Image 1 (spheres, rainbow, N blue to C red):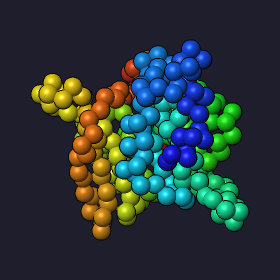
Image 2: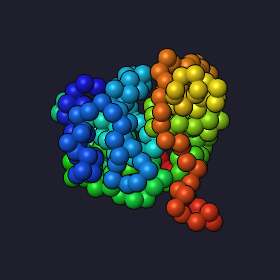
Image 3: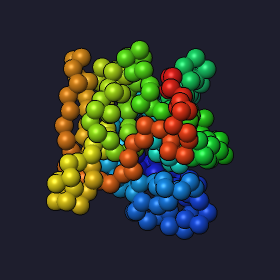
Image 4: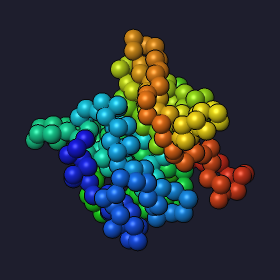
Length: 231
């Protein structure tokens, strides 16, 4: 994970006016209004709890600027000559190892452009609504899921059928109002694992603030349907 942070420049995923602040351990505005990129220390913790390994398939929900998507792609990329050949063939057959889903079309276009400019080929940004993803129909299709927006448990649990055996999902789960007052946070990280076919969940001692996970882009008409995610 440390190598990924050293290799992937956070500044490249920020608007020009914020790039001088890229080294700060704080949330920063992105290219699109009302969205932010999380503080690096929190991102590091979430990646550590995912326990990522080369060759895994990863879904990120709420890709935002694409910075975390790029970190994920770096961590799970295959090393060694023959491993890279197999990874290339896998991309041809199954697509990229990391898919980031972003509901805001402008944000998704920005993230795709930066990934392309940086030459990050084993990651893709999809414009769509991850909550419309038919996880049951694609059961066991991913090894790891990272949710980069806070939500009620019921929203997050809609993604769980997609986890393979041994798979992990980490997400900031919205806290009750009285806990928000006590902690000053709006959510708490929760780790889900599929162990022997059963989902086990545990709350982590990490309290956070994230933007809300949206069911649809509020700038789009209510009658328009967000594209369902297909992996």
